[in-house]
Length: 399
Image (tube, rainbow, N blue to C red; front, side, top):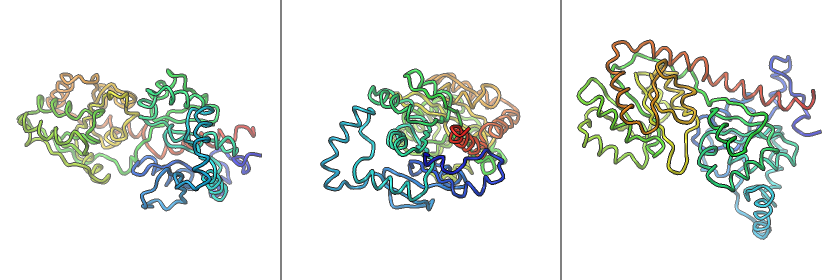
């Protein structure tokens, strides 16, 4: 009997659910700094998790059993490497699967930890363990989040590897319908696919007293966030008015945006706060009226999935002005809890900022934003949904 099914997987509400889940261990590939992944590690199935990571920086904030996959190759594995890479490329469209002594150590780790299910965060990471899971009788799920289902699809080899991976997966999740549709256009589909946004802790992210005329943009200052468009639109609409824009985040476009603010005469109305800890972002969102995010498709095809920052902004009652990009229209309803324009529509973005500034009472849209987050992006509900889908999928062969 496959190891994943050795213990009965009960439906939610079973009397012995808690006792069983104390023993129900999961493993996921981990990227440091991703709050939604950290949340899975800390809380999914009561935190009964262990971690396989490609690299490790020496920090261990979550305190889970850890296996670092990219260990230094021993002499035997150095000899095996070219043959393993060639076999993987031919058979699975990728040379990334573990092999030799490192594979044996990984299998031993999975066995010692009593792993029953693998959840690979990002489709690119699922390529590493999908076949291994099949060979070990472990169901493998993956979670698509953005780059893995947008920019990665520019590569014919990656599209092939994704298609070859599908039969090895027990199921897959995506933060937005957009990403699943994007994958499907390239023949990457799975019958057990579900949209579950990353979500937000709506108890920690909640509205506070709003500073009138306050605008906030959060995120890396990179091409797909188009901070220069946000800044120019704000300057055109808000120059000399009761309005202030704060940017939180750093990146390659930060200095050019600082210069642009001076050139457009709004340096006194714009604050560049740089990178900030998550608690500082939450505090800023709590008191902000309007959240701005002009997301666009980067030249290399990179897109958002459904930005966590937008979900957090909605939870804090921020009216969100964004673009019809990726999964954003799945969260922001134009004229209800925010406003939307097309990508690169700077004129439209400036016009919507002016409209919001001219609106005497913005409380109804703010309340609608909060209601959206409570109904659709509560991460406690999302975690429960992921657990239920995994449990039902693993239990299905027994029924």
